[in-house]
Length: 404
Image 1 (cartoon, rainbow, N blue to C red):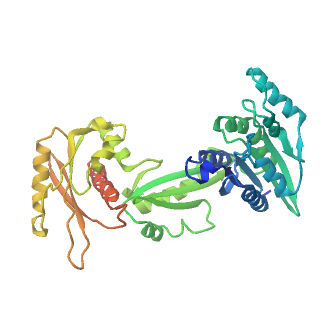
Image 2 (tube, helix red, strand yellow):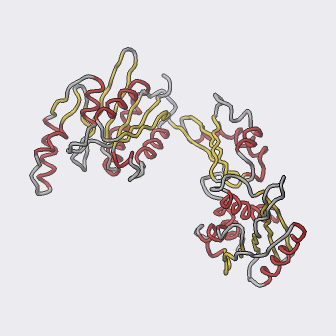
Image 3 (tube, helix red, strand yellow):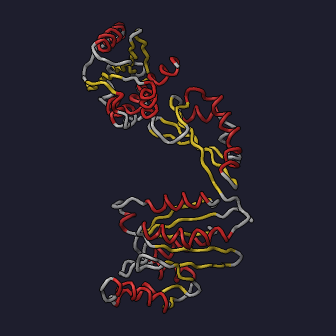
């Protein structure tokens, strides 16, 4: 039997308006991946009946499995039951056991059930009740067959604690039983890199990133950090790791020191941990990076590796192209005045000529001397400074690797 493909639907005006972040879809995607189900679509829809009906119809038509969260409350804007029933052309029925449970739940809390809560005991004809141990919104389990296509729909409440409990007790075991022969695990292996652009990375690893390759290798860029994600499917973590090993080794041999981690983290976290392990510290003086290098280090959780004052000093040194040696002098003096093992000194942005790009000088100073670097100060205005700050931090990372 082929691998199940899923769609997740999140329902609510609070999501489509941006007032609340949809963390339910993220969590459900992670759970589905762990049991071998590939998520193909995430849909978010407002509290509108016609829009909900349309979303359910599309999802049922194109997925083997549909999971929705939200819209199971008792108020007029809770439309999931009616939308699902209308999408497949059936009526709603009232489940006596579900109604009795909701009434008992109110009674146990010393309250009488409001009449409007009766709607929470209504379900599309043909569906089963997904018990909610903690809330008044039971879920829906509905098997749909349209022509030759079969789809299983689970509707869960939007309250995360209730949704997760219902998932663990009822929904996940039901999904696993749908496809017992499939690989039971989808596992991702992460490689974090810095120092090469996305297009150059793709040219460097052309065969690894091609469509249809197994295991798949995805590439994403965020503020000049490139993340490679290797996705495997197996029956155990060991099988997944075995599948990923050759790909990971190939990436290592191609990228070398461009790789800074094999888990989700930022480059400053790695450098801070390296310093902490060595019992060493860094002082920072910066101009062109506007205090971001210091900010990054102070927010890693290992702020003890940073020696003060880590400060923004504007106009650190005004440099002409013929005077760049002055920055090395300033860096040496700064390092000598601080009780640190390393210093990062970032100069002013140097304006290029008519056919030249702007650049940013960075000096790494130690008790043994100074080494100067220069980087193009380019890219979209939103990422220039963050990229430059990472370049400065990466200079120290590479220096520490050389020392090691």
